[in-house]
Image (tube, rainbow, N blue to C red; front, top):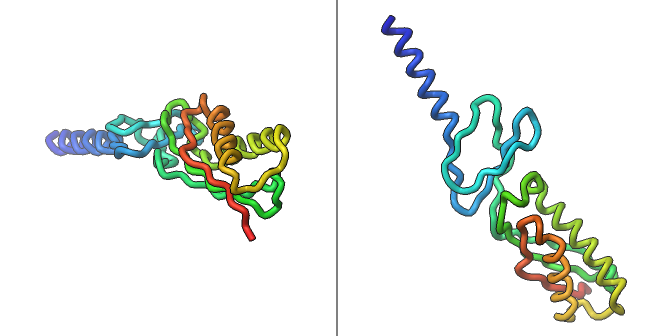
Length: 156
């Protein structure tokens, strides 16, 4: 009887240890259940269902950097450096699993819109970088993401 009680206690403690997870500051974790997105965990302690829930991605909230081609702005060799952060990981939701691809798609759409509305200028034009940053931020507003810096470069 004592052995089965000790075994039951050890099993309960092991399940509890597996169920409680701590997300560090500056990160968000995506949780999948049965292979599909279930929820996003923000910094702090959270309870998970052992064997059902699986942490798939550990996503930093700041320090994201993308290097992009911006040939639609008149120079085939032009590029852009885009820095963004995740302000609200819950609003980003399932998109956190592929956040760089999401931002890249919105940048491509913003570049197409800006290129249609303006004549080609030099990639070093600060006004063009500001216009790109504003347009991408407008598109990402509902996703909890924010572009903090955009720089355009003419590559030789």
